[in-house]
Length: 425
Ligand code: NAD
Image (cartoon, rainbow, N blue to C red; front, top):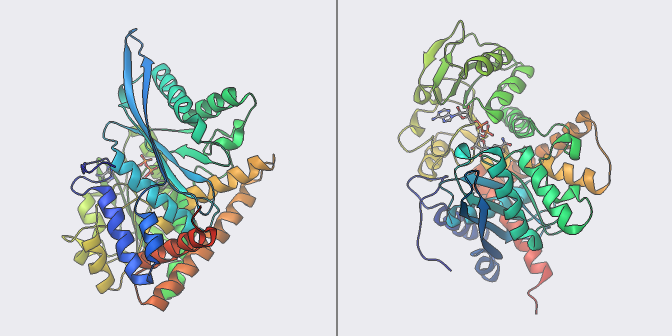
């Protein structure tokens, strides 16, 4: 067991695994978690650390470091993405694996939690180098993954093509095609309809349910969205379909604002052409910080972690914050938002649409069937509504924030599974 605490891609100041352990401790206190279960959940079930030697295009060989952390599988096979990034650390991968465990449990899908990471700089690697890296990494962990063991998916700088290489490598080793061994695949290989906007769809449905609970009519309500990538741009488009006026959005180059709202699909097309939302006609520019503090009804952070902090949380005027991004709010900011009665939908609930549709992809693959987008979206909607309601009820029952309630629900469910299985031998 390592003792060194490292920086990572998820946190500049804090060690991600320390944070995950603190959350576990806080939740254990809230729910009175059985101490034996608490003891088990302090460490991942398995940590794989592998070296991945590949031939570079220049003919030399380079050894990359890769991890797969399998946190807990009491509720079902391990499930979680694979991240390629120069700042990947083992502690970060461990934390992300714990959070996947909680996310799957809140969504009540029959999966445990895992995460993978390879320390590399994919922006400076050729397609061929990335393919060789992916195939060698897959072969190194092949004995420990599979449709009933551990099902990888895309994460930062991995995509459907990466999943296709994993699927092919794993299948070559098994001797037959195993499409259900990964999710987030291209549709041609058994990927699911609706996967590309599933995270945003879940986030917007959760915001809609939150609006109902506080009596906020969505028709004519306003929203601001930080980040205009996959999660942010689809959130804008889907909110508009509900009659919400999206008045501000941003990306890494800055933000745009128009109090009358704008057409998010046109903004998306503009960003596609120019590389940024900045400069879209009929809007004024706004900084990312000011965007967060606008007097809107709904705020969706959909970019980076640690954006709502002790410094700006007191200035947040939104009634609902739906966290599409992972970890956009610091624990200190959480307390301030709670005091100010902002209804915050925590990341493990608000962005669980992605893993829910991953689960639906796996179900389709195991049954050798392919659903329509309408079928997938209907299942997703049902699961998010149920998860939101259970979390909201829990928060009322325990008199805690939605974040504490989601963790309480998740850790109780995982704990119950562990206790019922018993400790072997
Ligand atoms: P993405 O790369 O498609 O988009 C990220 C966006 O954030 C880009 O528009 C980028 O310009 C913007 N951005 C970067 N730095 C910024 C800054 N300083 N200020 C404002 N905007 C900035 O990524 P994504 O897939 O949309 O993911 C966004 C967040 O949602 C991440 O935290 C991710 O972990 C989380 N998430 C995504 C999914 C998914 O399925 N896409 C699932 C779960 C969680």
